[in-house]
Image (tube, rainbow, N blue to C red):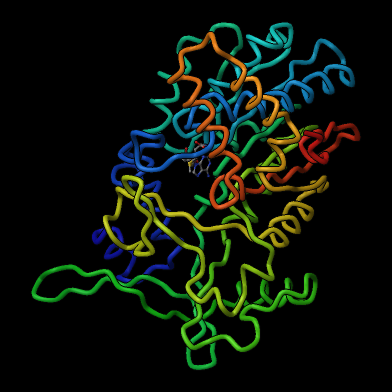
Length: 386
Ligand SMILES: C[S@@+](CC[C@H](N)C(=O)[O-])C[C@H]1O[C@@H](n2cnc3c(N)ncnc32)[C@H](O)[C@@H]1O
């Protein structure tokens, strides 16, 4: 990292640092494959706990495939596109679910994996090697945009990995907090440094202030109050939109309302890093072996999507989504199931409860958009019935 920063003149924006720390082809924690997702890895995500998450989301996906099938010429293949598939758990378990519960849908779909990092792409290919019922390909968004697809786009915990900049309020002025390389006795050190706020960011802040009434910083913030600026979201939505001829986009991620995100009391922002299941606010430590992640702001995300030709359908917390898709029924069935191996039943039960735990995964947001379609079933947004 020191060499890269030196090569860039000794000072870089935080977004550049985050991008290199995660995605730089040789040393980035995702790109090198060093960072692992799952119980035996560095951090867990809902699909990495087991098949339970995909078995519930799969119910909604199956209904969407049926919707598309009804509305489209039956010769059209429906693309199931996963962006940022990590270890490939979600795609693998979704296909197992469809094989078991909706086998007739398998020849209607293709699986398209969009992964930036080779370290993970290799593991995804191994994970999906046994799937023969559905055509699978790995594509870049640039390539897809040349021949846009019709279907379902999933982005599970991807937007929180897009590089962000840090904004800092110091001595009654707003700055970018960048990264600076210093040398002491021939040793390299990486520190934060305040950089002038670029005019492009000033314009964006003025735009969200006049259009969404969001003040950054909010009133009465303490000196050195910090937050994140989602610098990569605009181009991400533009690219995704260019890839969709007709379809829907489901984003699942940590997200907060602007009033909670940019609150005076959230003075350290939301940036956090993970390694070996330990969270740390020191995102400059162990560069290239940690995950670095920031929450999303619901209002700015929705507004960015809308300005890129998406229609916002709705959002809810993961706990409610999974209850609407039948989580409590699954828990009841497990309780009645005496024939299965007890350890497996207990593990499944534990996983289901973790997925809806309001202190952790249950607080994730499921945010749905559509483009160029007027149909879309929204069962996950319904009030849970049991
Ligand atoms: C936090 S992991 C989530 C993995 C998986 N979706 C899950 O929930 O288990 C982020 C994933 O997104 C990938 N990624 C990050 N930026 C990306 C981008 N711009 N385009 C595609 N994939 C990206 C990472 O390499 C990694 O696979």
